[in-house]
Image (cartoon, rainbow, N blue to C red; front, side, top):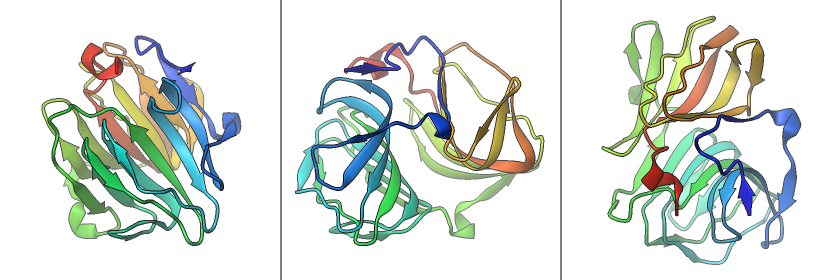
Length: 222
């Protein structure tokens, strides 16, 4: 299966374009933002757990990155309400579930094989944020391959992105405008290396998940 699989091209998905597809696990649906492969795929998705939905224990051979958007996502290590960032390295395993339902942003099989760091960050903690000029930044992960953060932008602030290795963002609050096109909460944008459109926060500002540097040839061919 190939969905937005040409990483040399810009890809965008607005919430009004979401198409929910049932997963093999009962009570779990996903919106496929990009995908290369069948069920065991390099994939970026919005995943929705119905109340009581759960997966059996399984391993992630290429790693897994999660940001909790709503509800409470759980595994054997704890319960994670909105704003938690989880990073499970290649070879790790877990048994995810949600008692009351949850929605999460998930990236699968997109980590280098030698990554070993397990990350748990509560982005609701004010101590996790730092001021950088007029914006606030919460660093989630940084390596030679990629940088991941949250950014809070004031109204109309331009989002400056280093596009050497491409960029990807998910709008978490407010609105981001690219050209004349607005992307509200839940909007997803992937920009290939070398492309540099103007992105700016809307009239109420914006909070975005931002990943850069990861869209190289070695990263996009599983």
